[in-house]
Length: 156
Image 1: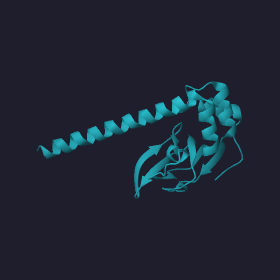
Image 2 (image 1 turned 180 degrees about the vertical axis):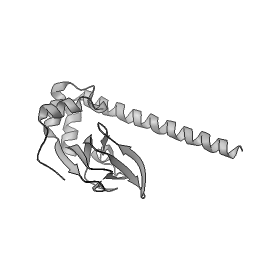
Image 3 (image 1 turned 135 degrees about the vertical axis):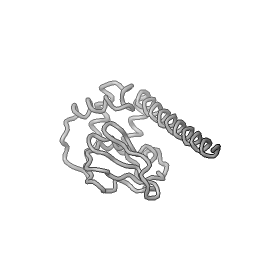
Image 4 (image 1 turned 135 degrees about the horizontal axis):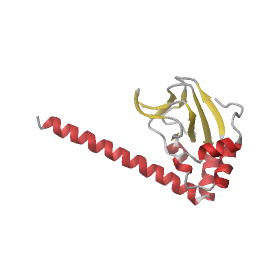
C-alpha cells in the first residue's frame, strides 16, 4: 500500500545509487528517478502483485523481503537493494506472484516513469540490461548445477 514518504529524495537517491541497476547512472539522473518513485509498505504475507497482473511496476526493496511465488512454491527471494517487477514494466505478463515474506518497505516506479527513464538515460537502460544479463547467467548456472546432479544421480 502507498504511504506518505518517509525518505527524502536525497535519501532515496543515495540508496538507489547502491542498487545494481542504478550504479552506472549519474547522480542527477538517479535523483530524477528517485523523485518519481512512490514509497510503499507491505505486511508479511501481503500480495504485491499476482501472476499475469497487467499493471507494471518496478519494486526496489528498501527493507524487508519479498518472495516470488510460482504455483504456490517460493522460487526466489529478494532482499534490500534488489528489484522485482521488470517483466511487468516491459508489458510481459509475469508468471510469478510477488508477496511480502516479511513486513517490507519498497520504492515503486511506474511503467510510464520507467519508460521515460530508459528513454532519457542510456546508462539506466544499460544498467538494467546488465542486471538482466546477471540474472540470466545465474539461471544458467543453476540449470547446469541441477543437470549435473541429475546426471550423477542417474549414473548411480
